[in-house]
Image 1 (cartoon, rainbow, N blue to C red):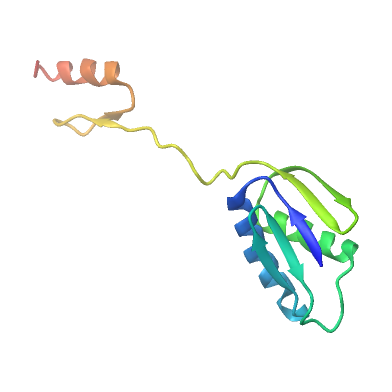
Image 2 (cartoon, rainbow, N blue to C red; image 1 turned 90 degrees about the horizontal axis):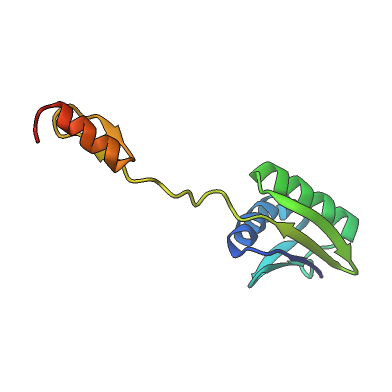
Amino acid sequence: MIKIKMNFQANVEKLAVKLAEELAPTSIIPLIRVCEIVLDDTSSETSLSIEEALGYVRKSLESIGLRYRRIYVKNDCIFINDCESGDERVEIPLLFCPFCGFSTPYEEVYWIHVKSHGAL
């Protein structure tokens, strides 16, 4: 069995889902264990070589747009030095003018704008 180790759990889950799609015809099942994926080939007629697995991993990483610094192989383990997922974006709260709907994330600009309506 080949192991794929990564840094971030969210990325492990995304990669495992994509690998499941890619490896479905081969009957190889990716299993998630904390921050690693184990490619279970016990139900497959043929075993997967580390080179073939590396090809599937690179293809899957590219197709889901997962960023990583480097990939290296040691024995039957593929190590991926991945970056944090960019999906968790911090949204800046906006302030809306009650008179015209003008919006800004900056409180000072908001108050200057509201004063321009002669409200304060």
